[in-house]
Image (cartoon, rainbow, N blue to C red):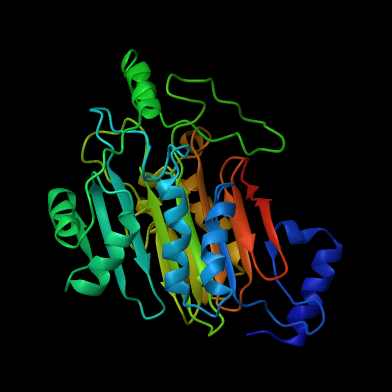
Length: 339
Ligand code: ASP
C-alpha cells in the first residue's frame, strides 16, 4: 500500500499540521509504515496498549495482543466503564459486552454477561471453541463457568454507591466524557453517578507479520435497562476487522452506532479509498445527518487503522482521545470532532 507519493503527501501534511487529522506512521529513516502498532480508545487505552505491546514487541500475534491489552482496563477497579467495577444497569446488575475479531474474520462475542471479570477472554473462547459467534446472558455465563472462569462480584462499593446515588433521581441520561478535553466547548451538568457515565475500550492491532485483530469491551451505558446491549459486542457495529483493508472500532452511544453498522461502514469506506480519519468522519456525519439536534447531545467516536499501519479518528463532541503505541511512540491524541 505504501508508495513514495503517499509518503511525500504525508510529509507535506505533517508540515501543515494535518497530522492531527490523520496520522501516518513512518519509521524515520526508511519511510515505511510502522509495524507492529496498537491503537485504542480513550486515555485508559495507554495502559491497555502497554499490555498489547508486551505481545507485539515480541513478534506476537495481533489477536493475543488485543486480548492481553483490553484485559487491563477490564480488571481496573478505577475504570467504571469497562469490566470489573463497571457501572451497573438500573437494577444494579453489572452486565458486560465484548467482542473480538481476527485476521481471518473469525469472531466471538458475549452480550449481557454478568460476574466475569474478563468478558473478552470468554468472547475469544466462544470464537475458538464453539460453532457460534455470540452467546448472551445466562448462556454466556454458563459457558464461561464450564470453561474455567470464576464468578466474581463486579459491583464494587464505589460503583454501588454511584448507582445508589443515581437511584435517587433514576433519570437515565448518557453523559458525555469531557474529561479528556483540551478545550471544553460542551460541558454537561454533573449528574449523580459521576461526571460521565459511559465509555468503552476498543483496540486495533497490526502485528509484525502484517495481520490485524481487534477487541472491544465495555460495561455499556450506566443505568441502562436490564438486558440492554450496545454496539460494542456487535460485530460490524462496535468492531470490524478485514485484513485486506483495515479495522475500526467505536465508543459512545451504541444505539447510534448500531443504526449505521458503524465500524463496518468505516472499513468499507477505507476499502473505497478513504483514509482512516476521513472514513471515521464520514461515519460520524452519517449519524449527525440523521438527527443533528440529537447529535449535539451525545458522543460517538470512531477509531480506525488501515492494514499499512496508518490510523485516524473522528467523533461528534470534543474530548474523545485515543492512545497509540509503536516502537517509536507511546502517546495519546485528541480526535478531531464535529462540534
Ligand atoms: N458504546 C458503549 C455502549 O453503547 C458505550 C460507550 O462506549 O461509551 O454500550
